[in-house]
Image (cartoon, rainbow, N blue to C red; front, top):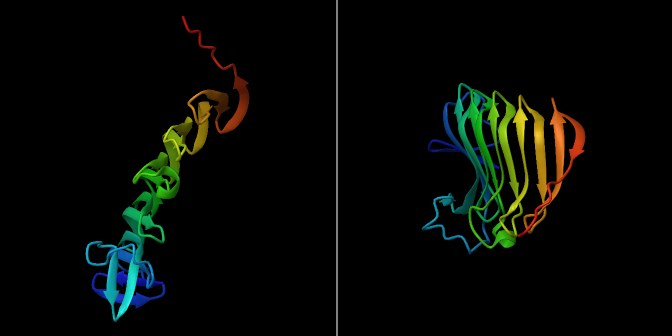
Length: 178
């Protein structure tokens, strides 16, 4: 892997004392489906075709700000947010286009606060872009109702959590059609 710090291309992990934007680059000599002239994630350096695998910010040697991870085709796969070295803010994982047929379909989303999951968790089926599971995190632990769904949107299971511990399955409400 190569690291691009500002305008310098370095080999190995040279980011520990650096402040600024960092790009982790990987060789990409063969994937002609990515156009290096129109895609900022692909570049030529010293006669080699390389692409961005990760881009992130470092402040005083700590991850700070957005952290993006790309797949081998240069598509955004995961987005994290860091504050002074800890996950803090939104996390998004995206579906592979192969399974979803679309760009930027969110597979998983959750927020972090001070390094722990906090708030609404949402997971989707990539093939249908329908929800697969929703629930809530409190201080990094599952809390309250967690609902699992089938691909066609029917509730499969409702689990109750307390302080991260599974307590019981709740009754699935019946739906009457008039």
